[in-house]
Length: 456
Ligand code: GDP
Ligand code: MG
Image (cartoon, rainbow, N blue to C red; front, side):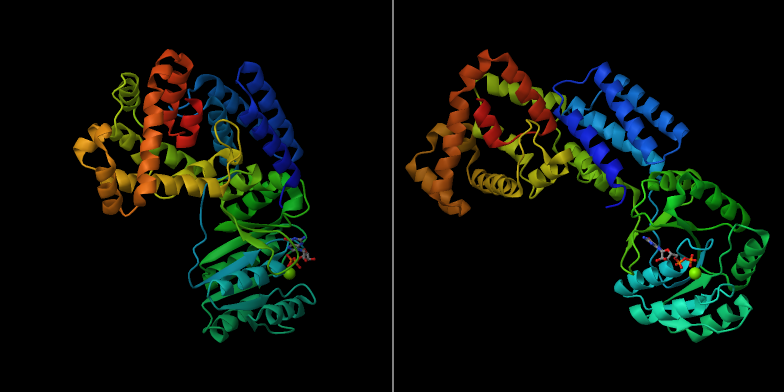
């Protein structure tokens, strides 16, 4: 995994936050200091780090979590959002038929990446041809030819030819049957005028659809100025950062490049042809932090949230002792969308229940299935029955069981759960903590039948 150490530190910090019984000023300070240390170790620029930690502190101290989200989860959300800002915005590389030109200095991984990209595109069903336009380095032709054979990509080169423009023009014609053409260009030891002129000339005459800058992650923050200089000189469309494997400095390269607003489209993670990843800041960060997709967490909270008024009304109804099956139905309906529970809990950081207990997929599947069954049963009851559950005698139960197709056992189980809830209404009334807990659960959707039963 890329940035192992940073990942471990950040995961540890998040774990600490979600395990904290309460969050105060000191906790926030301590946590941000730890984030600071972890980011600096990964070579992220000091200014960026300070800005991030200041913002996290300020937001954590001043913002209120939305209804239904714990303070702990909200801090995690803030950290996630601020870290995402240093990684740049999402920009997907358009996988369409096109000509791509790779540029960069010696040894940064252009030729290797030419092959890796071809492999990736081929896997996506786009035939790819490679053009060997590095006329400076002896052996460049052979290297690319070799790679093209290894990955079954098309190849065009002219051994001994010194004019790259001529090779590229011929290559594009020769490889016309390939959907994607990738031009591997010459490097230099430094970003000199000669290289800039060469790139400029090929770019203006050939008009590739994308010019991508290939840069080595081990350069750390130095990747930034280089990308900027080249971007200023020839205007690049995006960046590929190679050698993300085995360097602790990748945080520097990533953040420095993001700072100049050039999207990072791919990252190289090893020497083999398969060691390339499409770079997506959100996914990258989620993986780095060891959590599910936080976007889907937010989405689910919105989907399941009752308004303050709705939560209050449901609660009052429950407390008044007139809690009928319709009320139960209303609550369950919020959670009866297939896969919602799974999505919800799966999206929680570290896969944890609000109470701290781990829950696994099979439990979620069961809960989901139970809700589905109960919902179908409730749908088969008349309004009169929903409002007056006591009338559900053996005859009615049989009718509902047949009508819903769910069997008498399930109908009786549902009624048993309903009665258990109702029976405890009195006890609940006396328990203020319970009221508070239930209210947050209703609002936030952190609700499961078993959870509720065990608290009653
Ligand atoms: P070029 O001069 O820019 O064409 O660079 P090359 O493609 O020849 O790569 C230079 C060296 O870096 C080679 O030894 C590659 O195997 C190595 N390399 C390229 N990309 C990666 C990567 O993502 N990870 C690792 N570990 N090595 C890489
Ligand atoms: Mg090369």
